[in-house]
Length: 332
Image 1 (cartoon, rainbow, N blue to C red):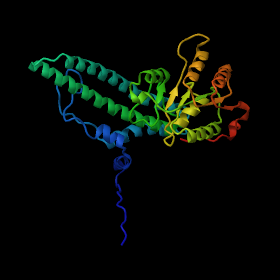
Image 2: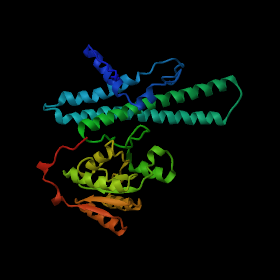
Image 3: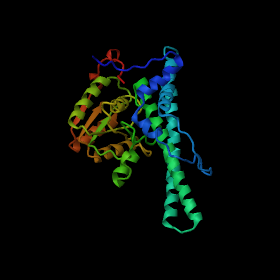
Image 4: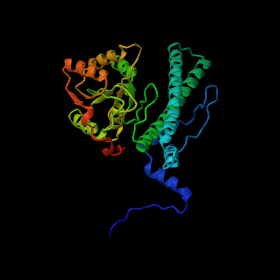
């Protein structure tokens, strides 16, 4: 006698979303939503209380559903090109709130540390200490939940648009992220100070740079696959452009099967020498390999700088690209 797997069915359309959520809920949502504090403080100044958290399944389903709905609504219409911009803003809302909560958590933690370093045995002191600790834990719980939703919404954005989501500035990094978009200043600070592990990729550096106009993604992805096979724990450092070759590299790094940390090393400062200074800084990261696409004089200068540093370089010429009309849509 054979056992047949138990399957669930629904007889109402309204039940379909619940069934879908139960089939796809991830451990990250279970961790962020499934075991809430017994009591929490929702806002500073409020009394502790027993406040519910959203159900993990519902949180994931609604979060992903909003992103999918934007693309579905605009698909096949004159508004379709705008769908990624609208969806980007939705993900960025989560990112903005998560940042506010992180700063609030840090401030409360400083106050808590100050209290702990100056103890007294009064009941007032003990009450203040317990309340401050609960407030810090409550904010940390809120931050973890919002970061979890942001990361899932960002992954839905990547699947729908074909491009990884990244913030307008700063970093997106959390324990749930498969690949972190890390601003260069955060990256360099973390390497020097060895502070927060989520901002400190440990792998060998591979430098990537190319122009804003580049369409042949398949050739670049194939070469990046080869490099990753040799350097499985690599960190990819690009010159931070949001389109063209750098965006193609970012999309490759964000794919779940790659999950490569990505450092967007943009231009910081002003003046004509800023970009050339950036090129020298890239060489100072001691990359193990580099992939450069023919572009402006900046790419030519970077090629020269890396060559002088004896970095193995994979160079691609514009003229060697596959014709634009023959390039298929980039895979998610």
